[in-house]
Length: 311
Image 1 (tube, rainbow, N blue to C red):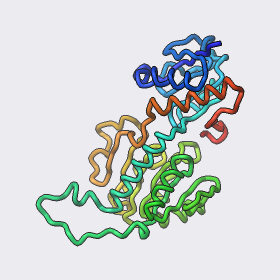
Image 2: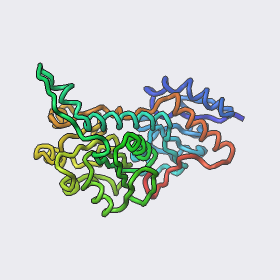
Image 3: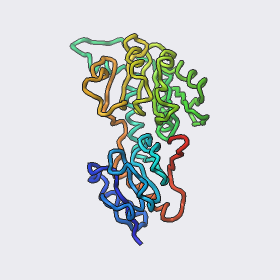
Image 4: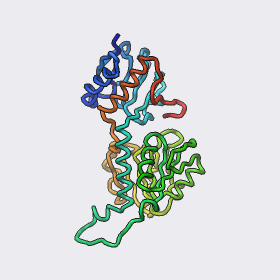
Protein backbone atom coordinates (compact mmCIF):
# COMPACT_ATOMS: atom_id res chain seq x y z
CA UNK A 1 0.00 0.00 0.00
CA UNK A 2 1.36 3.41 -0.97
CA UNK A 3 1.59 6.33 1.46
CA UNK A 4 1.25 9.97 0.43
CA UNK A 5 3.87 12.50 1.47
CA UNK A 6 2.56 16.04 1.17
CA UNK A 7 5.40 18.51 0.51
CA UNK A 8 3.89 21.57 2.24
CA UNK A 9 7.14 23.52 2.40
CA UNK A 10 6.60 25.94 -0.46
CA UNK A 11 6.80 25.68 -4.21
CA UNK A 12 10.16 27.46 -4.26
CA UNK A 13 11.75 24.56 -2.35
CA UNK A 14 10.04 21.85 -4.39
CA UNK A 15 12.70 21.59 -7.14
CA UNK A 16 15.39 20.92 -4.52
CA UNK A 17 13.41 18.09 -2.93
CA UNK A 18 11.20 16.45 -5.55
CA UNK A 19 13.69 13.93 -6.90
CA UNK A 20 15.86 13.62 -3.77
CA UNK A 21 12.90 12.92 -1.49
CA UNK A 22 11.28 10.33 -3.75
CA UNK A 23 14.61 8.53 -4.16
CA UNK A 24 15.41 8.59 -0.43
CA UNK A 25 11.99 7.22 0.55
CA UNK A 26 12.27 4.45 -2.03
CA UNK A 27 15.76 3.61 -0.76
CA UNK A 28 14.31 3.40 2.77
CA UNK A 29 12.00 0.68 1.49
CA UNK A 30 8.74 2.63 1.63
CA UNK A 31 6.26 2.68 -1.23
CA UNK A 32 5.23 6.33 -1.36
CA UNK A 33 4.28 9.14 -3.65
CA UNK A 34 5.61 12.62 -2.92
CA UNK A 35 3.27 15.39 -4.05
CA UNK A 36 3.13 19.15 -3.98
CA UNK A 37 -0.61 19.11 -3.38
CA UNK A 38 -2.77 16.66 -1.44
CA UNK A 39 -6.19 16.65 0.13
CA UNK A 40 -6.33 16.41 3.92
CA UNK A 41 -7.66 12.86 3.61
CA UNK A 42 -4.74 11.78 1.42
CA UNK A 43 -1.80 13.15 3.42
CA UNK A 44 -0.05 10.50 5.51
CA UNK A 45 3.00 12.67 6.23
CA UNK A 46 3.47 16.42 5.93
CA UNK A 47 6.86 17.92 5.11
CA UNK A 48 6.65 21.45 6.47
CA UNK A 49 8.46 24.77 6.40
CA UNK A 50 7.11 28.23 7.32
CA UNK A 51 5.59 30.03 4.38
CA UNK A 52 4.06 26.89 2.91
CA UNK A 53 0.34 26.33 2.25
CA UNK A 54 -0.67 25.00 5.67
CA UNK A 55 -1.51 27.04 8.74
CA UNK A 56 -4.44 24.99 10.04
CA UNK A 57 -3.52 21.35 10.66
CA UNK A 58 -6.94 20.25 11.92
CA UNK A 59 -8.17 18.84 8.60
CA UNK A 60 -5.12 16.55 8.35
CA UNK A 61 -6.41 13.96 10.79
CA UNK A 62 -4.77 11.08 8.94
CA UNK A 63 -1.27 12.57 9.04
CA UNK A 64 1.04 10.45 11.16
CA UNK A 65 3.69 13.19 11.58
CA UNK A 66 4.68 16.69 10.54
CA UNK A 67 8.33 16.69 9.49
CA UNK A 68 9.92 20.12 9.77
CA UNK A 69 12.62 21.11 7.29
CA UNK A 70 14.28 23.48 9.74
CA UNK A 71 16.21 22.83 12.93
CA UNK A 72 14.20 25.57 14.66
CA UNK A 73 10.51 24.98 15.32
CA UNK A 74 9.48 28.25 16.97
CA UNK A 75 7.31 29.15 13.97
CA UNK A 76 5.17 26.05 14.33
CA UNK A 77 5.42 24.60 17.84
CA UNK A 78 2.91 27.08 19.25
CA UNK A 79 0.29 26.36 16.58
CA UNK A 80 -2.76 25.20 18.55
CA UNK A 81 -4.14 23.33 15.53
CA UNK A 82 -1.09 21.07 15.37
CA UNK A 83 -1.80 17.87 17.29
CA UNK A 84 0.21 15.49 15.12
CA UNK A 85 3.74 14.47 16.19
CA UNK A 86 6.23 17.15 15.16
CA UNK A 87 9.82 16.31 14.26
CA UNK A 88 12.59 18.88 13.84
CA UNK A 89 15.40 18.60 11.32
CA UNK A 90 18.70 17.19 12.54
CA UNK A 91 20.80 16.68 9.45
CA UNK A 92 24.52 15.81 9.39
CA UNK A 93 25.07 18.18 6.44
CA UNK A 94 23.27 21.01 8.24
CA UNK A 95 25.44 20.38 11.30
CA UNK A 96 28.61 20.31 9.20
CA UNK A 97 27.66 23.59 7.54
CA UNK A 98 27.09 25.25 10.90
CA UNK A 99 30.42 23.98 12.25
CA UNK A 100 32.23 25.40 9.23
CA UNK A 101 30.50 28.79 9.42
CA UNK A 102 31.04 29.16 13.18
CA UNK A 103 34.66 27.99 13.04
CA UNK A 104 35.39 30.37 10.17
CA UNK A 105 34.01 33.41 11.96
CA UNK A 106 35.57 32.51 15.31
CA UNK A 107 38.96 32.24 13.61
CA UNK A 108 38.34 35.46 11.68
CA UNK A 109 37.83 37.40 14.90
CA UNK A 110 40.44 35.50 16.89
CA UNK A 111 43.14 36.20 14.30
CA UNK A 112 42.01 39.76 13.59
CA UNK A 113 41.75 39.05 9.87
CA UNK A 114 39.70 42.15 9.12
CA UNK A 115 42.71 44.39 9.73
CA UNK A 116 44.44 42.89 6.71
CA UNK A 117 41.44 42.01 4.55
CA UNK A 118 39.57 45.32 4.85
CA UNK A 119 42.23 47.85 5.75
CA UNK A 120 45.37 47.41 3.66
CA UNK A 121 45.59 50.76 1.80
CA UNK A 122 49.32 50.35 1.19
CA UNK A 123 50.07 50.17 4.92
CA UNK A 124 52.33 47.41 6.23
CA UNK A 125 50.59 46.40 9.47
CA UNK A 126 53.18 44.16 11.05
CA UNK A 127 53.75 43.51 14.70
CA UNK A 128 50.15 42.48 15.35
CA UNK A 129 50.01 39.03 16.88
CA UNK A 130 46.83 37.59 18.43
CA UNK A 131 46.99 35.26 21.41
CA UNK A 132 47.08 31.60 20.52
CA UNK A 133 43.82 29.70 20.69
CA UNK A 134 44.47 28.29 24.17
CA UNK A 135 44.49 31.85 25.50
CA UNK A 136 41.12 32.84 23.98
CA UNK A 137 38.08 31.59 25.96
CA UNK A 138 35.05 30.87 23.81
CA UNK A 139 31.49 30.36 25.03
CA UNK A 140 28.86 28.31 23.24
CA UNK A 141 25.35 29.18 24.44
CA UNK A 142 23.19 26.18 23.60
CA UNK A 143 24.37 22.59 23.76
CA UNK A 144 22.02 20.90 21.34
CA UNK A 145 23.25 19.05 18.28
CA UNK A 146 24.68 22.18 16.67
CA UNK A 147 26.19 23.65 19.82
CA UNK A 148 27.92 20.44 20.80
CA UNK A 149 29.37 19.97 17.33
CA UNK A 150 30.66 23.55 17.15
CA UNK A 151 32.08 23.35 20.65
CA UNK A 152 33.96 20.14 19.91
CA UNK A 153 35.39 21.59 16.69
CA UNK A 154 36.66 24.71 18.45
CA UNK A 155 38.06 22.70 21.36
CA UNK A 156 39.88 20.59 18.78
CA UNK A 157 41.62 23.75 17.57
CA UNK A 158 42.83 24.46 21.08
CA UNK A 159 40.27 27.00 22.29
CA UNK A 160 39.13 26.63 25.91
CA UNK A 161 35.40 26.19 25.24
CA UNK A 162 32.74 26.82 27.85
CA UNK A 163 29.24 25.55 27.15
CA UNK A 164 26.00 26.76 28.64
CA UNK A 165 22.54 25.24 28.54
CA UNK A 166 19.38 25.77 30.55
CA UNK A 167 19.63 22.26 31.98
CA UNK A 168 22.86 20.58 33.03
CA UNK A 169 24.68 18.68 30.27
CA UNK A 170 28.05 17.02 29.98
CA UNK A 171 29.99 17.28 26.72
CA UNK A 172 33.50 15.77 26.58
CA UNK A 173 36.13 18.46 26.04
CA UNK A 174 33.81 21.33 27.05
CA UNK A 175 33.52 23.10 30.40
CA UNK A 176 29.74 22.91 30.80
CA UNK A 177 27.50 25.11 32.94
CA UNK A 178 23.78 25.60 33.45
CA UNK A 179 21.17 27.90 34.97
CA UNK A 180 21.55 31.61 35.69
CA UNK A 181 24.72 31.37 37.77
CA UNK A 182 26.33 29.29 35.03
CA UNK A 183 25.37 31.84 32.39
CA UNK A 184 26.95 34.62 34.43
CA UNK A 185 30.11 32.60 34.86
CA UNK A 186 30.42 31.77 31.16
CA UNK A 187 29.68 35.27 29.87
CA UNK A 188 32.06 36.94 32.34
CA UNK A 189 34.96 34.97 30.82
CA UNK A 190 34.01 34.69 27.15
CA UNK A 191 36.10 36.73 24.75
CA UNK A 192 34.02 35.22 21.95
CA UNK A 193 30.41 34.10 22.49
CA UNK A 194 28.51 31.98 19.97
CA UNK A 195 24.72 31.82 20.30
CA UNK A 196 23.13 28.54 19.25
CA UNK A 197 20.08 28.39 21.48
CA UNK A 198 16.57 27.58 20.29
CA UNK A 199 14.10 30.44 20.57
CA UNK A 200 11.67 29.88 23.43
CA UNK A 201 9.98 32.06 26.02
CA UNK A 202 12.99 31.46 28.28
CA UNK A 203 15.65 32.37 25.71
CA UNK A 204 13.96 35.38 24.08
CA UNK A 205 16.35 38.35 24.61
CA UNK A 206 18.62 36.20 26.75
CA UNK A 207 21.52 38.46 25.79
CA UNK A 208 20.21 41.69 27.28
CA UNK A 209 21.98 44.88 28.36
CA UNK A 210 22.87 43.51 31.79
CA UNK A 211 24.38 40.28 30.47
CA UNK A 212 26.22 42.06 27.67
CA UNK A 213 27.74 44.37 30.27
CA UNK A 214 29.03 41.34 32.19
CA UNK A 215 31.22 40.21 29.27
CA UNK A 216 34.92 41.15 28.98
CA UNK A 217 35.35 44.54 27.35
CA UNK A 218 35.85 44.17 23.60
CA UNK A 219 34.29 40.70 23.46
CA UNK A 220 32.93 39.33 20.20
CA UNK A 221 29.35 38.12 19.71
CA UNK A 222 28.52 35.64 16.94
CA UNK A 223 24.85 34.77 16.44
CA UNK A 224 23.84 32.06 13.97
CA UNK A 225 21.03 30.90 16.29
CA UNK A 226 17.94 33.10 16.37
CA UNK A 227 17.69 36.87 16.02
CA UNK A 228 15.47 37.36 19.05
CA UNK A 229 18.12 35.94 21.38
CA UNK A 230 19.70 39.44 21.48
CA UNK A 231 18.36 42.81 22.55
CA UNK A 232 19.13 44.81 19.39
CA UNK A 233 19.22 48.21 21.08
CA UNK A 234 21.43 46.94 23.90
CA UNK A 235 23.83 45.43 21.37
CA UNK A 236 24.09 48.68 19.39
CA UNK A 237 24.73 50.67 22.57
CA UNK A 238 27.41 48.20 23.69
CA UNK A 239 29.14 48.37 20.31
CA UNK A 240 29.11 52.17 20.35
CA UNK A 241 30.55 52.19 23.87
CA UNK A 242 33.31 49.69 23.03
CA UNK A 243 31.95 47.11 25.47
CA UNK A 244 31.49 44.74 22.52
CA UNK A 245 34.23 44.78 19.90
CA UNK A 246 32.24 43.30 17.01
CA UNK A 247 29.05 41.34 16.31
CA UNK A 248 28.66 38.91 13.44
CA UNK A 249 24.96 38.25 12.95
CA UNK A 250 23.33 35.72 10.66
CA UNK A 251 19.79 35.84 12.07
CA UNK A 252 17.44 38.72 12.85
CA UNK A 253 14.09 39.54 14.39
CA UNK A 254 12.82 40.49 10.94
CA UNK A 255 14.09 38.71 7.84
CA UNK A 256 15.14 39.79 5.32
CA UNK A 257 16.77 42.51 7.40
CA UNK A 258 15.19 45.83 6.24
CA UNK A 259 17.59 48.10 4.29
CA UNK A 260 16.98 50.87 6.82
CA UNK A 261 18.03 48.77 9.81
CA UNK A 262 21.04 50.26 11.67
CA UNK A 263 22.84 46.91 11.62
CA UNK A 264 23.63 47.37 7.91
CA UNK A 265 25.63 50.55 8.36
CA UNK A 266 27.30 49.89 11.70
CA UNK A 267 31.09 49.54 11.29
CA UNK A 268 31.31 46.91 14.03
CA UNK A 269 28.57 44.62 12.71
CA UNK A 270 28.86 41.95 10.03
CA UNK A 271 25.52 40.90 8.52
CA UNK A 272 25.18 37.57 6.75
CA UNK A 273 21.78 36.64 5.24
CA UNK A 274 20.78 33.58 7.31
CA UNK A 275 23.29 31.36 5.54
CA UNK A 276 25.18 29.88 8.51
CA UNK A 277 23.74 26.48 7.68
CA UNK A 278 21.26 25.81 4.94
CA UNK A 279 19.05 22.74 4.83
CA UNK A 280 20.16 20.82 1.75
CA UNK A 281 17.65 18.77 -0.17
CA UNK A 282 19.86 15.76 -0.79
CA UNK A 283 20.79 15.16 2.85
CA UNK A 284 17.60 16.41 4.52
CA UNK A 285 15.58 14.04 2.32
CA UNK A 286 17.34 11.08 3.91
CA UNK A 287 16.40 12.30 7.39
CA UNK A 288 12.77 12.71 6.33
CA UNK A 289 12.76 9.30 4.66
CA UNK A 290 14.06 7.60 7.80
CA UNK A 291 11.27 9.09 9.88
CA UNK A 292 8.69 7.97 7.32
CA UNK A 293 10.18 4.48 7.42
CA UNK A 294 9.96 4.54 11.20
CA UNK A 295 6.37 5.71 11.11
CA UNK A 296 5.38 2.92 8.76
CA UNK A 297 7.25 0.35 10.85
CA UNK A 298 5.62 1.51 14.10
CA UNK A 299 8.94 2.71 15.51
CA UNK A 300 9.60 5.91 17.45
CA UNK A 301 10.24 9.02 15.39
CA UNK A 302 13.65 10.67 15.47
CA UNK A 303 14.00 14.25 16.76
CA UNK A 304 10.49 14.44 18.18
CA UNK A 305 9.73 17.91 19.53
CA UNK A 306 8.82 18.30 23.21
CA UNK A 307 5.93 20.76 23.07
CA UNK A 308 6.37 21.76 26.70
CA UNK A 309 9.97 22.83 26.18
CA UNK A 310 9.35 24.28 22.75
CA UNK A 311 12.03 22.33 20.86
